[in-house]
Length: 112
Image 1: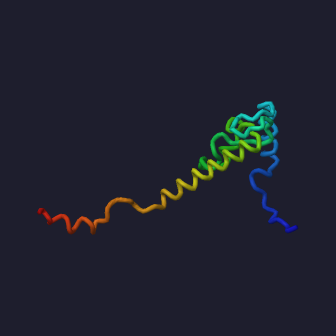
Image 2: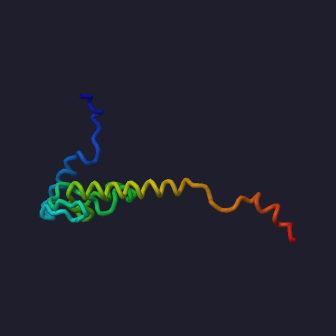
Image 3: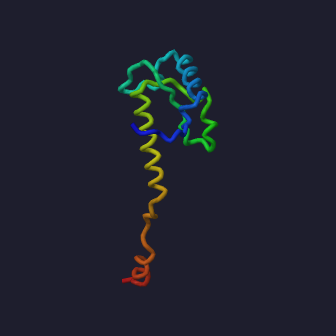
């Protein structure tokens, strides 16, 4: 087994664990997402508005932006958000799809 880097991510903090416990308790341990593979019993904390959509990630860490989720629903939602983010990133990197200016030169003077 390899040793980790010792770095703490945002989900390993005591504050995040306490927030998860509060949200699960508040929602009665019932999944709020209710996707097609829902098992009903929530064990995870889902951010309603994606953490990456906030300019400051700390702003996302409020109970009112959280809901209880079962593992299958949370996994599915997270995957959808990842796909959407990748598509958005790719669309920003694409070159313009208009006609090349060189294609217009030969046609400008040809009237007949």
